[in-house]
Length: 229
Image 1 (cartoon, rainbow, N blue to C red):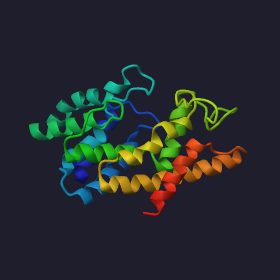
Image 2 (cartoon, rainbow, N blue to C red):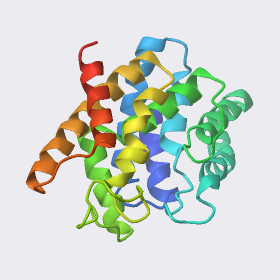
Image 3 (cartoon, one colour):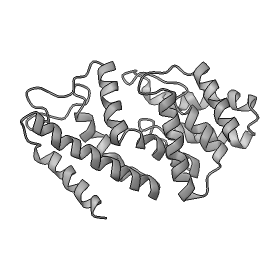
Image 4 (tube, one colour):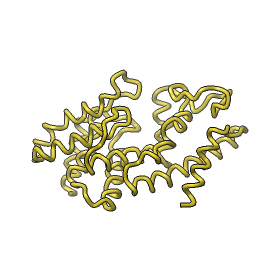
């Protein structure tokens, strides 16, 4: 598998347009997450899973692109001749394509294989924890989105809006991810990483000399409850 990994990484460096939050390091982490989950699940084809992990962002569209929801399907379509060239069978190619197409949050394609379920969890794990904190602000800086509304940082008296404020994205999407994990291992890792983010929020509110409103406190209670499991 080391040879396959080196081959896939070399192809990615040539074929994929990378950005700071979707680079080869992100792909390495997604594969690492996927392998950890697969060790518990025990049903995945690891060659298919590795290829899907490294090629899931093969077509990497900007977050604000109007056709952003199509990126995973475009990636799945583009990967077929690449996989054929490196010796994947037709069945392996189709399995890899499905895992890639179904990993996307915005595409809304139900995963129907172990590889697809694991990849979806593995990719979402990289949006949580210490890495997730860093990636939130890398993406926000790239898109010109400030950390928080200076007048109401945690949306006590305004609607949450992650198109304007980076921290709002945590409430609207990222801290909802642990409940959406499809594998037991993915859920366990996600909850641990989410608790780190919740602790960060508490400290952030202190440094901003404000308090988290109730709708954030509900998430904190969720984190405390999971910590007790």
